[in-house]
Structure formats: structure tokens, C-alpha cells
Length: 156
View (cartoon, rainbow, N blue to C red):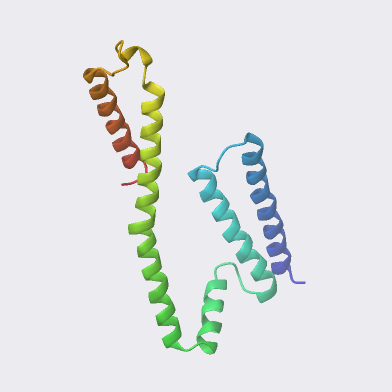
């Protein structure tokens, strides 16, 4: 085992330790992974994958994508690479412009509905159980503002 492969091995072990440390901290706090933790996990995962492959390929960390692409070019025809690139691009555009906004709007609507049920006060009803128009207008305006803030916060 060369010195370079030993360094790659240690980087791989270190990335595994950091990856599982982040996951265990999130699991212990019993909450979802936030954006920063997700970006950290993705970065550590990519570094771990590159260092793992560099142990066997014997190339430096930054040469691995070039080695993999050049080996694929020899084995796979260029038409297949172009077609798969187009399919992946179409899928990414579909996700980014159709699926992601629908998921964001659904979660923001749920957040707005939860706000209305939380803020609705039974004292706003009259003796017949009807809600006053002022209360309805107030709740609707605040819920709409909450919905719009949620959309803005999530990038829509």
C-alpha cells in the first residue's frame, strides 16, 4: 500500500466517522435534518466516496472524476452518453419546476392551516356559534401572510 493510498484510507475513515457523528447527533435530538446538516452530510459523503475509490484507482482526489469519465468514454458510445445526459437534464428540470414547487406549496398550505386552527379562538363566536366577520378577515389575512412568507422562505 502506497503512502497516497494510506492517506486516502485515513480520509475515508475520517469521513465515515464525521458522517455517522452528524447522523447520530440528529437522531439523538429527535428532529429532522436541516439544510446545513444536509449539505454537510452530502459533502462528507462525496469526500468519502472519492477517497474510497482513490484507494483502489491510485489517482489523486481530484483526478477520480476524470478517470471515471475517460473509462466510460472507452466503453460506452457517445450517443448513449448524450441521451442519458438529456434524460437526466429533463428529469432535473421536471423535479425543479414541477415536483418541488408542489411540495413546497403543500407544506406551506399545511402550515397556514395549522396557524388558523391554532389561532382560532372560541370566544370569537356569538351565542349561535357563528364567527364574526372581523375574526374571519383577521384570520384569513394573517394566514395568507404566513403562507406567502413560507413560500418566500422556501424559494418560491
